[in-house]
Length: 326
Image (cartoon, rainbow, N blue to C red; front, side):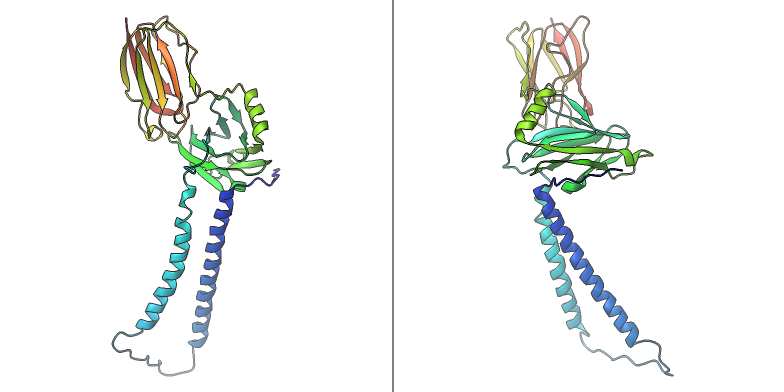
């Protein structure tokens, strides 16, 4: 199987490898010392031609307290050092708070392929295309069994679990393409070894050109011009929706011609898809909406009386209704 490794890296990789080397060095040192002690005592107290077992020295008072304290001090110092380095790296879990707005991409695992859905709704298979020097936030899930999304060259990985979104982020700092650089590291079936993809890092200008070619506009909201009665209503996608929360409110009653604004306050990407419409009703601008990143909104004006049901495609528990009266 072809695996072409191009020099695509991320700043977090250096921290990961630094921790790895710390633990490897200390583990090797500890193993060497313990093995040396075992060999020393085995040789020293090997079987001898004696008739009586040797008498051990009788300790009084606190016994070998000095040896115990010294052992605890050495062990505590070593463990404290590595734990400090580990906890100092916990900021790698969440995207930097002071960075530019990240690019959110939904990643879906399915036997045996990865798909990547961008904010404009465009979905790519087998190839994740991102701009250089940009915080990329991946919202990772699965539609069938457990998978594990892994980019070894960037030292990042996250489980893909059905019905759940896990967040992974990275920032690739140089250009290149890693062929077969995206892997599944969770045994997921007979085609597990074929569940691979490419990572392509483009310059900002090249990415803008590529993204425009997919039909993406990058707009932060979608709206349509229809007959409105001037009234408005709001629906929120609350923080935590990707972990089980629903639209708020989940049931809404409005009069015909009311303009409704859906706003995403969650870290994950969501969309709005109307699945049930009253007879003769249409959704201005069509359905579903574009993918909504945190802080983005989608507006629609409903004019036909009846009950409308809508969902988020990415989170099966998110389902709500709007009742429009005449």
